[in-house]
Length: 285
Image 1: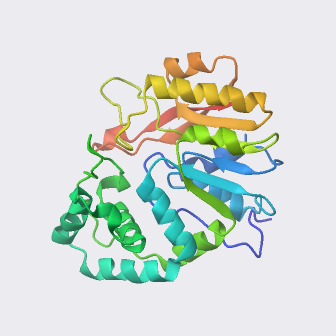
Image 2: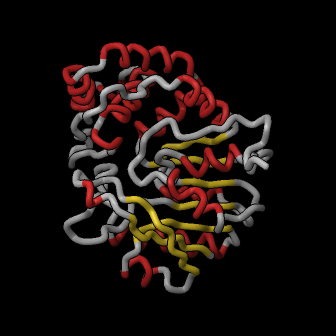
């Protein structure tokens, strides 16, 4: 029997996302709850868990609160939800004209003082175009908040994936999408709600840190703030689960909770021998 409902579109992420959970879905869902009220995902990223829950029919009649601190990411989700056809038209234009010159010209747009005044549709198309053509789909910004990932070496990048975008749009129709910090989840979550936390991971070593998801890094202090929220959500009798790196810092912080281990592929490495299996933790209460 299929895990998907016959009348349910098999929605999946429309973005490539470093640290995305598509490759871990089976391992995660073996630990996820089967019964809960509403769903909350405050580190949305590529949204793999949300789309999987939707495709399995586990969000029927429920609210899904999806949020992220990345304003360009959230704008893109809102456009996918509300205006997918026009977005696809914009992406086809990018697909037909893609080359190195267009990539870097498009990447430079956020250096302009009037970038935020550009139409939301145009900014969303830019976001997806860069995501599909940059190195490894890696969203990275510098200290000024400017996107700075170099172009990737793709022969035929799938820039305008109509079916994926339309299915994602349908899945998002009942979702509440917000641009906000993770702590705001406390305001919306109630007893028996399921909260999945997938923050920027704590670095495995001092030299392998990748936390520049936005210009505010997510190191010790932020991880401790997230731990405090985890505790408060537990006290509210929410079902809370959190993914992170298998490090002593994280395991010590959450030592009072259940810690499971899952195996993930490490992709953010230019060398082939840096793309091996690596342990991650799934913390739950």
